[in-house]
Length: 244
Image 1 (cartoon, rainbow, N blue to C red):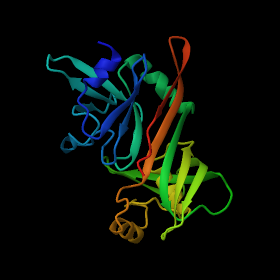
Image 2 (tube, rainbow, N blue to C red):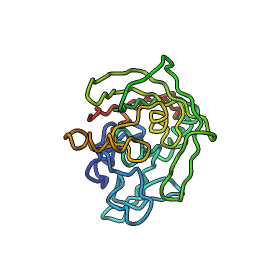
Image 3 (spheres, one colour):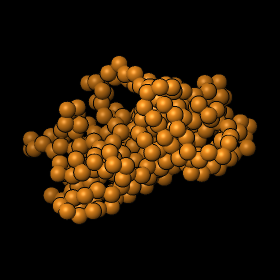
């Protein structure tokens, strides 16, 4: 069975769409807001990408078919449940470490769209902050100040007059810290529309009542990377249309 056939036969939940599969089993899917990258507890079954047991040690879904055959589907990166867009997985265990190495060596380019309240002030196209992360094992909460360096490039701004004034930002995170884009936009007075943790709750409610978006307006639009396999350098790119 080809990788394409295997991918199409997997028990994806509603809200997940296959975007691209390469000949080596590297797979990109689009997830909608509310879909988890992986389950954190048993009650999350049916809320994560696949209806299957997730092995946290292997960082892979264990899918059992009707004949009892097992397929490992390796999760290569994550998005918050409320964030939509591109997620990478692999059906081939031989490329997992290669793709993870590409992330570590910063050979992966991810582009996000974020609809925010307000508009950028100042001319610096690069944001640098320190972020602290605390986790209770199920949920993570990050805060600005101390901790690890978070770096993001602001690539483009499209303003919408309002009221309220909103802007569609095109962002390229250089680092991959927890809630990085949500914290960095909020710190600069531009909370992401619909952010219930770091956002402007009053504006979120008013925006929702007006019949506009009631979701976290953060979307991973594209992921591009280069990885090595069997002595060759290979390129992969997947694109997901922004829904807001």
